[in-house]
Length: 327
Image (cartoon, rainbow, N blue to C red; front, side):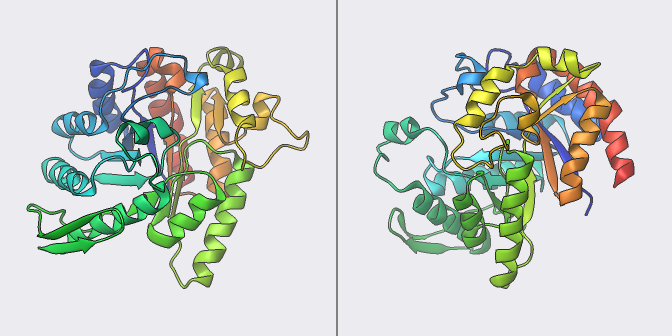
């Protein structure tokens, strides 16, 4: 199957906009993008590189609105955080799939912000175990007319959902750490980190594929969500991004493969996690992932949401056609 391409929607931060979200999704569909994606938070605390504006529109509301005005573009969660009760989550997913049609893409991770779980009384809950239990309940809700569950965190007597999804939805595990690869293999169908450097991605994928063979599993789905800045040339595209913020964030990543210098000091050190430049530059950066083998790339334009419409046009009209030819 050819690599698919998506967009992270502007439903968060200072330039979040109902019009950008809805009209942007319609434009993405018309330009041939395969998917649009949303983030998930209960209490949104922006990363330092994003500024301080905590505007955040609920991901289910966003995708429901888009589902009503589009017909074929896939609706992706990148990624769901396990702060909802899994029965409520099952109801919401089943309902969204029913209303939008069979086009949901699900990824699930344990999140970065403990404050969200503290606020819900889940402070001492081991989030990796919670996530595994939630995945099990979701799958039961999709494949059983009625089911009971007796777990460590969740228990329910016999119950069922109707309508259910037409067929089980693959669930990808989000995260860029070695543990994320282990969890993807343990209870998910794919691995879907956000931004991740190319060298780190290669290392993780090598482990993911080798361990899948050892475990007798098929190759898992693979994807990523690189920060992207596209413009007439690289110099202009770089000026519109907080490169120092990206470098600081990169140096805080405990499990990323470091450059030869031992620290991330230049934008070139961010290769893979940051795609920047002209349309041709972006094509070349994507091709590096295609050489490794990747199933889905989602362009994260969070630094360019103020020029969202223009950037979507550039990607859709000058990048996608060249990538499609390569496939």
